[in-house]
Length: 419
Picture 1 (cartoon, rainbow, N blue to C red):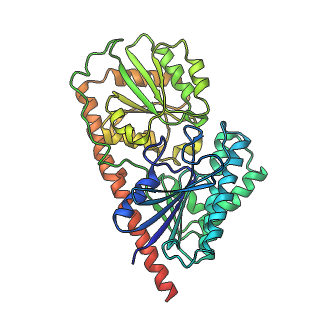
Picture 2 (picture 1 turned 135 degrees about the horizontal axis):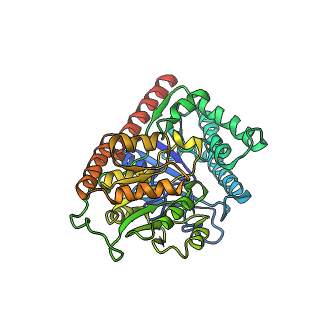
Picture 3 (picture 1 turned 90 degrees about the vertical axis):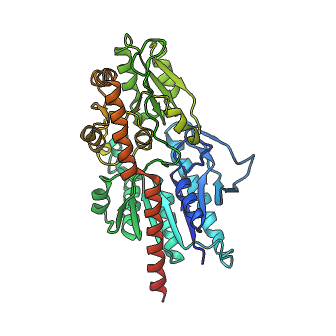
């Protein structure tokens, strides 16, 4: 009998959009294996900050995306990470609650009834609502933890832990960890954290690339001599927000303008215009528009190195699983990272590129020059080692298979409980 999976993540995207596609890739794999999958996501794209599917006053649209029942839900938009961001989150929770409420009027439709519910953070309120719904209908519930809310708000935003909002989110967080049938963490270092908050059944399933799309492409042999007409190109792809610490990268670029090295920023976010303005007189920086996820593999093959940049936030030392880093591994490009802790340790230990401490332009500039001066043969070896790690640990194929095993085990356990 076909099993039905509901996946809830406000920020899920399909490959024709910029942003992460983890839920899409998990769902696509499950559909091919015979599962019936419904995804519930916001139509407001987080990268572009605009709607793409819903027209006028539509509150919902169901689209069949390669066999996935994709539910696009209306939310209130926002431009910057201010008060309106929280209104945006609450609006998704409201529409999602109506979806759950409507279940009781369609309960006779077995194709609609979920056998397992998976909700992905960092949006804790919708994950909590999904947990309550799962318990109400007595179905297994999986909480997938992307970012460690509310701790990241305290560490990065300087919010007092006794703040009323933080206290509510802390309460929600503990309930999710305590009552979820399984807590999936994307960052290996987050396992200890969620256990300390009450989680018992924890599984590490990291972010990672689809290795059938992110093919290994060896650096071209002519990439040995660089000039200002053909510079050493460092790509940054992703969000241009406060957490990304791109001001640090701009200052580092400014320090090495006399070198044939170019920084190319691809993406969007609330700080992009400010970053463009601050770098207007720096000649080795280029900004480009965001691109759909499906175009990223080809785009990265033209890079000489790929940059991962984040601010100096204690939580980032163990609590992140950055897609852009593992995409670089899969393509076979040396990386430049500014994330102290597990990320930098992995890069240094396996000789995958160069590292720098965060928010230190001079250190970053020196790291970039070091990689720039590295021989082509060594840069190729860095890429080859990175590809092997992508295949062994971060492969989306591996993660999808483990997810299906988890779903099957929870389904069997739930069936035995009912008997």
